[in-house]
Amino acid sequence: MASSTLKAYNSQKALKTVVENFRKPRQLFMYHPIQFEINGTFPTTKTSLFSKNVNGTTYWLANMKNGFEEKDRQILTHDGKFREEDFLAVFDEFCKANGLFAGSNTPSTVAEKCYTKAIEKYMKKNNITAQVQNKSSHFFAMNESQMFKYRHYDDGELPDGYSINVPETVEDVSQIVGRSVAPNAKLVEEKLRRFPSLCVRKGEELAGFISSETHGALAHLHVFDSHRGKNLGEKLEIGAAKMAIENGIRPCKFIDTTNSFFLEKAKKSKMMDVVESNGTPLVFDQNVYTPASNYGAYQ
Image (cartoon, rainbow, N blue to C red; front, side, top):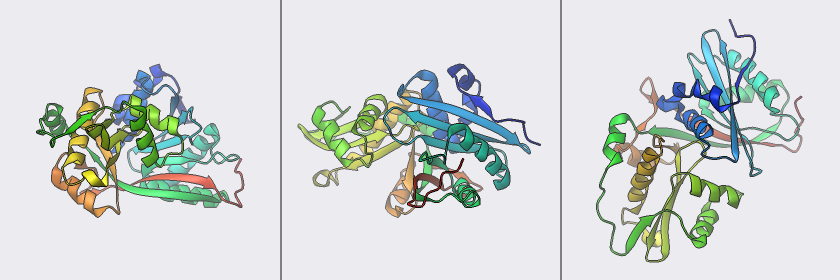
């Protein structure tokens, strides 16, 4: 049996009634944006949440609108057993409620791999042709004991001449924006200002940085070539994780499934646990859908 209509949580008060539901590691990328909406952490983004229970499984679908003319982001998850047919019926309601696949408004989703496959079938059924930019990742998150350890962790001295602090200068931001794949410089600047972000410098020279995404995951860790081999990346990540913990964010990160070097490094470090289901690491997709040349709007 299904509940009659899609339930909407459009206010901070409504979101507070369900936010604690998403503390499970595999749902942290849903928990953090809702918590940010409740706390007003990123005021240019408006996150609305929708849910529907079908045959004992609750499907949760969030839509994140932002004021920087970037695509809206959709975050999808569930409690219970995922059933593709049931999800597709819920997803159709969600699309119509948020105008997805209407005109040029195509989705940008973060979800487990099973959702990607279902959306492919949805598009085929409705004769929707769109190009898909896919990034498949494994998801890592700190457990309680790891958070306790790293909250006050002393990772030793930096090499001579190096220092770590928050991005401060216009030049810092300019160089970080230059390394970003995001097309909107203002969006990058706002994320640096409002979420855990750090720079490492040698004197006045920027040597590396780490930032965070609007779904709460640490991201964009980068050390410039001439400064590698000094363990600066690990120090940046630990520092950003400590900042996240201080701000009520459970440290987490996505690592590309094709990046075997960093996947093995992350597993060996034991700083975070890979999120699994029945002993197998889950695959999460971050997909950006764009209209194809023969794109037909689905109404």
